[in-house]
Image (tube, rainbow, N blue to C red):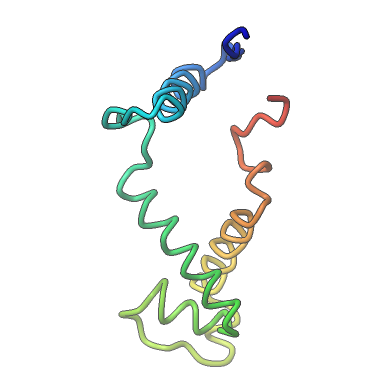
Length: 119
């Protein structure tokens, strides 16, 4: 039986795909992969943002309102905005943008910029 062959497109994600493939081969061979390169792992900011978006999804599933998300998860140290002040606030728009991104984590990640659906 021939070993599997892999095809990696030559584009801006080639180094990332190569590292992912190497890590997969090591894992399939029962070996531990080395520490990931900085390009392979999300930055500290990206980790916090992803964790926050996942917390937002969990809270929404538990019935939290947009305003509750805003002032418990996104702006926990801010004063609560009420009525028209909340309705027209940049905070509300920011939370809605974050929530739209969070919802993409449930399967819509293929529409993120840079994701190549052809592979």
